[in-house]
Length: 202
Image (cartoon, rainbow, N blue to C red):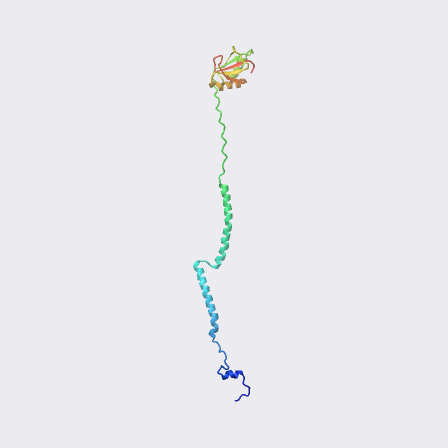
């Protein structure tokens, strides 16, 4: 069969031995399924390896996410515990008690000798003055004070004289009972332990 069409460049290619009417051959079915299968296998293998790693370390992604808030909560609670501890510590600390003020040296109790020899001498000229004051001392517990008249040097004011330091407290008590302000250690005119010299009504 003869062709009546004019010769063109395609006819030149055919005459030079090039491919004429070549088409791509269809691909086998297994090459189409290979790519997703490989991807699935690789993804499964990676998931398996990751699961094994987490299983061996005892940590799972869920536990990691739940552990973080717990740690943070614990950390945030520490200042509160410290503050509470400091408060307790402050309250438990013993308070220093103020030192007691040393008390003043107690004065010794007066030593009053109710058996001391006492004479009440009247130098005032008032009758019975010595006797009435001697009675006051006797009522106070002194043993039989003597009453007599004062002779010799007359003092300018009523006074109580004691012969020895041992009778100082006794002389003070006598002066207090009779209302006499002057108490002196001096020689007595009647050789007694305590002598009351009266020149006026006490």
